[in-house]
Length: 630
View 1 (tube, rainbow, N blue to C red):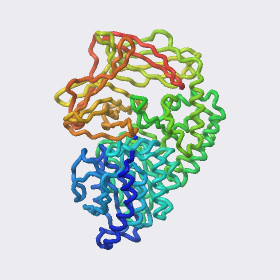
View 2 (cartoon, rainbow, N blue to C red):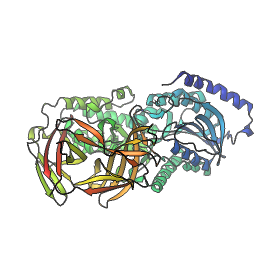
View 3 (cartoon, rainbow, N blue to C red):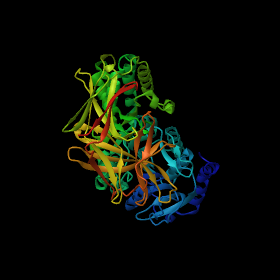
View 4 (cartoon, rainbow, N blue to C red):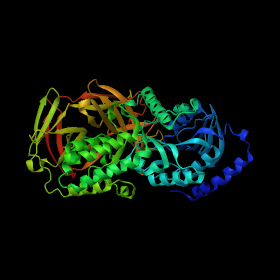
């Protein structure tokens, strides 16, 4: 999350070469050109990434439906030469892009495009125009599939320096493609990608489609179940809404089958209603901007408690996307002067989101998220370039200004009250009255004191700020630490816990490094597990990879013989922090055999426990102590 000259030349030559090819072949030479068909589905598969194995399965699913009377399935599929060599629908493995028509159990190659850049908007625009020209229908759907990054865009073409399609490029590509084809707008625009169900995406692309289908949260690698397109093959009168709901239902059913349903989201947004959402967001932010003085603490606490998506233990890798309607409705409760505007915005969002699903860890997700870094230090200046922000940028500006204007940083009284009990060890800190109102969140982190005086941290999790006037922050650690085992070796891992403790569902993120067997490829992963704390059951486990260059997220599927190594945070006595590998040999990456366990710290271990409070401007203070486990 750079196009080369050859990609530009190829893109410019596409229409000419394909038109010439089409002129030479008869209607019977293609599987099923349905001149008066009901639906044409265009699939733009940016598979020149580590998601290629998943996308090849998606194509096989489309092949179970196949082009038939009333339905045309055409795809531009760009593959790599390093992730999988499986044949697809009767076509041998290839590298580069092919334009294919997907039949029932087979595919017909319409054109071999070679090594083109799918991060080039001209390539997407040409694919849209050509697909519509070749397969005219009453209704059109476009599905863009790859890694997603929310408002920064989608993609990462591995053959072109991981070039992505920015939101502005997606907008221009679809607009140009529709203009060339003479079609006003798509019936459905889908993103089979992470994090794309955002206000920014929906508002920007609203003029180009009637419906948006996308996920607020990271998507599991299997993505959509493309067999759902059978909905319009079986019923030529099926509407876009019926197809959209079938896609959502199919995604949920497949996630249930794959064991990934605990943290999924998928929503269908009526883009024709986004103008109402735009207006309501502007009214809401106008009220907040007008009354900006003093709203910072309430906004900060509300943000910290609102459902977020694409979260990471590393703030620099967090997407900072928050559920818009959840945030809005709570602000309306806490700030009475904004309640009417908040209610109006919440209603507009609810009206626009026609269908949605969530999981146990994403319960209550309302269908649209919005970019809201908690402090200005995490804000991406590229965001200012987006259009149609509905006053949101004005609100962020005054909120960050108020945070930076905080004169008194938070202060915790010297010393912490640390006690052992049946739930483990509890640390309590007291904060002063002057800075208490500005606090937005608290957390604890814990680790083992080494012989050299450094601390090897084992994890972090949320703590609680009192709301009863007692002026305390409290965190409890159950004295367990995470180990991972591949059945051969076992090693310690760092555990970051976050979620709604009241619901009993938390997400546990474990930072890892990974290596291919030959050592040629390496990088950073997060092993993300959704856990029911009441039963101890693990509801879902997934590897996610973050690409720093493109800023995109997606599931990563290392081969079973690849190596993963957990990393832990080590802090020296002088405060120097570094992340260290916990093993010299590592573990095999096969999720099916990987065993993780919470072990109890033994008696006598010197435990470092730290409680941190944060105000809405990002200022912090902490108290800590070292105790011996009884």
